[in-house]
Length: 442
Image 1 (cartoon, rainbow, N blue to C red):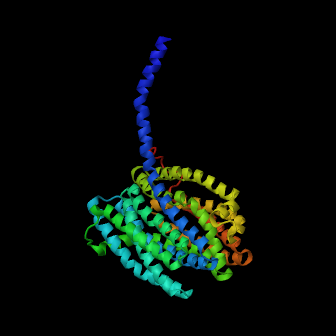
Image 2: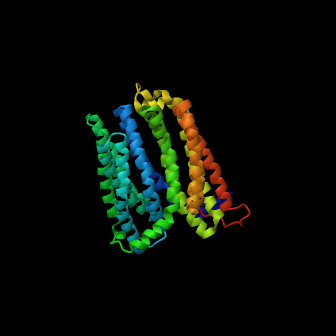
Image 3: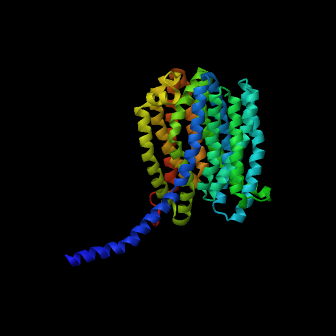
């Protein structure tokens, strides 16, 4: 018995360093696999969520419909900035040293300011089309400040500093929601002031994140070569993302034009609830793209697929719980967010339908992030064009027949087609007969 006891004690003693190493390794991997990326995206999504909820509770459905359409256009135009500046910054700067990235970050900030001119004119033009030119000017200012802050945010992430990005994003998105809530409580909230709040908080956040990047910001030079490099890296992504976002904006715009501002407001009201899943869904790209790209470079395509599968599975399990709650308690959630007397309480069945469609969107998004990491953006473009054409063919008749439910059904068909084509492209990139790569140390 004494011998057995000594043997167990000796075994435990030898196991302690291994156990300690395992705990430390797991903690490091938690950070590597996206803890801070999810935290940062959670801050961003929470701020956006609170902003839209406060607006929905404080202004009429008609005005909220105008906000939905105009803010949706800003999201659509942000795709140009994201594809030609954010994506190149992510994939180029992540592999550069501080001296090389210094010029890229500085130039990206200049490019963002220049790009805001034509994009802002598009916002003002759309606002004039719906009879709100002055509102368009405020939206232009908000768009400029937003894109500058997004540039500094992504530059931090590209240098693997998601933790630092949380500070500025808290200033931008949470303070934005706080200001808009304060305006609603004082009875002075307007859409113009909401856009002004976005401009102010994004400007402050951009200053903070620029200070965090101060060692990597210098005088820009070599613009011609850098513009060419950014364009080569991001132009296929641009066309693909524009196509994708055209599909997303088709729903509120078709509802607005065919069923009125109230229908567009209803779509935004349930989209707000689905936005609770965005910390997981959108942060997935911040993790999969750099990690899968690195895995492919070091160990091959199978390793990249394995890394993406691990992260997508983890996110999918969390989302199943979220979607289950949305399906089980839609009316209660609507009452909680919009009030017991809200006109949005009759949208419970639409939420259930959207939750099912949104899970298809998550699968399509995971495939897209992996293909982005593999730089298969050209093939994705042609797939997105075909899927978007299918959406445009189905959404008008479905909205005509079923209203909001028809718009959601059209989106569900679109998401499913994106899943199918994404899987087809991935199979072509990494055929089953490829030689087995070494195991991924994830």
